[in-house]
Length: 483
Image (cartoon, rainbow, N blue to C red; front, side, top):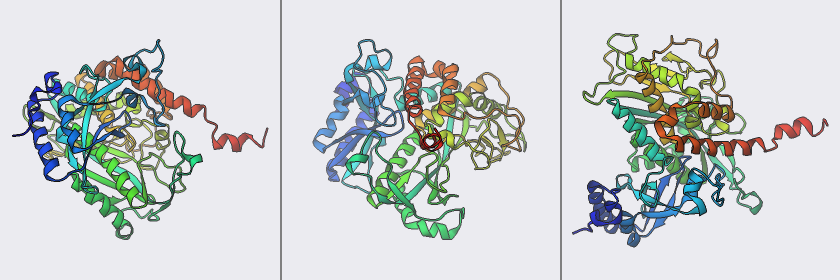
């Protein structure tokens, strides 16, 4: 008879369901039976980076009884891992006030996410949800944000299905940059060399050159039970793309953070470096897009609301969804293109969008409509996100903006056939411009709460201001000799 977690602290606080309690018993038995030595108890932070603690089997059961405490400042870090909020100040407000003194928050296990690691079979992962120690939710915790958006969509009688195309690079690693002078916050970038020359998109010979690395990634992704659909050689040197079968938003967000982490870990172990950076500063390197395919179903009937009756038509739901994504595109940019570097990707004629418009099966447009009569896979592809985005935030932005368009009865404008020309409004040119659009909008604050919008604004403005205060190579070259 396994341990009964229904009487533990988490269950008594209403944070562990009876189903989760039963699954916890099975997992503890599995850990013992399979000789698993370590369990990495993790959460997806505000950047979609996995963080947490590693437990031995004897301590694993306690996570289901009482959760696991971690420093709250892990939720307050920017991309350099600096704490972006004044937690030591008596005058601290918002998130910093709740987490003043670098106090603890609590991880609540999500036992359905448990995975034995195929590249390290003595170890396993389990994802968790951070909450305050009294059990209250944290408004900006990644999976809490997405679940809020999923629930809001369900309140309109709809559910979303998402499919993913993820672009990234795999390089040979030449220098780890581990000498003392290069280990700062952030550390110096590692030195790399291409595995293949690139610029032979989808050619068999390029795939053959990278097959060893691609097999390594694919086999481990499948070992994690991620729904890999295809493995492709992309346009640029050492650039590849993995696509995933459609699934619900939470499943896909979990898959994305597992996939990115797995790729970086298994490549590093083999002397390679994998990067999901939007636009690497490497000669001839191509930008990495993250194309999010999305459709919406009527919960009552299961019918795809984007599937038209006649060829060339848009359903009212598809039209409203497109209009919502376009209307709120600039404000949503902070959640789908979250870094300073993200905005270097929005260049014309590079298979990335730079204007806020949609097209019918047009890869240059921000939104690509792939709808056909009697095609249950009818969907909208958003090509504006990049592979560095926090998937929980990015998917929440899609669900909220699209659903708002349907709720408001909006209609899509005419489609474009010239996505890099004309008078259509442009996507933000910088993180600063995206911040201004996010702060001027009310749609995400209304859906996710003021605590979330204030938090995200502060976090990304801290990053943006660090960037603005840095003297660039361009400035040095432009002015040092001249003046």
